[in-house]
Amino acid sequence: MLRAIGGAATVGGAAASYVAVDTFGYDNLKRSMSYNQVAIPGFVAYKYTDWKTKPERGVSPEERNAAFAKLDEEWAGKALEKIYELRGFYVKNGQMIAGNVGDAAPPIWQDTMKPLLDDCPNIPFEVVKGVVEKDLGGDIDDFFDDFETKPLAAASIGQVHRARVKGTGERVVVKVQYPGVEGVFRGDVRTIKTFCQLAMPEHVPVFDEIEKQFMTEFDYVKEAENLSMISANIAKEPKFLGKGAHEIGIVVPKPITKLCTKNVLTMEELHPAQKLADGLKEDLGTFAKLRGMTPEALTEEERKLDEQAWAEGREREGPGAAEMDKVIGFVDQSNSARQWLGRFGLGWAYPALARTMGAPVLEKARAPMNHARMVDRLLEVHGHEIFVDGAFNGDPHPGNFLLVQPGNMIGLIDYGQVKVMTLEQRLVLARLIKALCDGDDEKIAASMYEAGFRTKHQKQDVICKMARLYYDRNNKASTEGLHVQLYLEKLQAEDPIVSQADDYLMCGRVAVMLRGFGDALHQPRSTAQAWLPFAEALLREAGELPPAAPAEVQRRAKLARRNSRLHK
Image 1: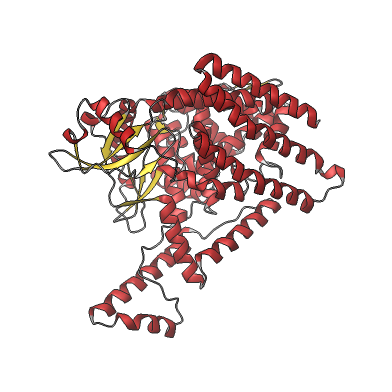
Image 2: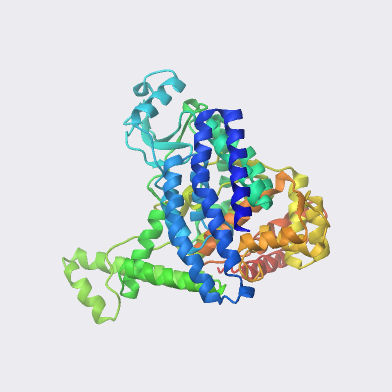
């Protein structure tokens, strides 16, 4: 078996290399070979360990977990090194792992890849300056003042710099595309698709759609149009303004269209703001203080608890919204007390006063975000984009979220992968979501068929399991205790997928990515339940459901929130 896997993987690597050199030249051939130097041995190692440690071979769960943990320690670091070396589309893959997409990667892989969410490799400023000047048709100083040479952030296809618009002084960020990155991406996706065709065929349709959607990311004029459309859609909805005491608002930056070209995207700066990863690190420090621990000690404790839960197939559930509100209230009160004492020159007395009251001594800090409400709001806004607006971001990984101050706001950035759905497509998805929440297997299978999903034998139970995996949940309970990849392989062996409609794959990808983000914050959710109110509203508008009284609408929305653990 080991030889078969190794030989097959080698053939896949050779085929991928042929595609790369035939289509894109020898540079991509070298990239393909470099990728396969890690992908093939890693794939063989995991497959062999899976075979060697199966329970029927007399291996205990503890021994099996230990064997895979050893592999994770070895290969996560190797994979990150290769990603830093190759960049391109491989950065996207690493970001998906870091974002816990599909709950498919163990904690050590997620932690290893987290730097890719906000610390990708960047290119020299002289190259950036050259792209800006060529595309805008003049010296960079003709268009911008204070164009910062150090990038604010770097991503897989470009990097972002702060600047001010010449003449107006408006604060902006300028995203500049890496020269030649489009050809690199195409070669990378072809390489991975060829590998998947051989090793993991169930993922090929997903990569087909990803390839189509990613290709739209290389036209920043189109992305500017997407930003204008999405920001206008979001601004129409009062609940996303964040005006309530506990409401989390949503903001999308507007483009400066006169300074946008295919390779240069200029947009308003969301200010003051910080990367979500940085904000979560601050939250970690606050939680550690409240526990009387160092951030390092709390991180290690959380890591062990995560690994234990992973090994046992359990979901870890963090505090709900109400409990988080109490923590936030305590931090706010602590800040207020310190400030009040400071007015009278008694700031030095705050630590002693806090200890006397039996409270933790906190440094002045931003109150943590309410993680439960944040996950709820992100699910809600993407559900609104899909079902109400029919235009949504197909790449909602944590690196595309900002914490915007003052106020309780989340900034959504990077709208290169916007998927537009027709009304009929949205209705098909709404029927599927409704059937999932009703537990109606017959309607689930019918909706999947309507969405273009076909299997060889059209087994209803397999189709329903696939639907739940994509659009509802992917925890160990729903995957029969198996890892997501092994569960997919099991379903594929039982009833192979023949075709999937590309139009719905990105919706499933969004659902999986947002659930993964929630899982990473210990806020597990049901996507179907979270999106049920939108689905029912759309079906009512189309006359497929009877009108509901306002009280009934509120009751069902509340029930959906509770069922998906949307604690309010």
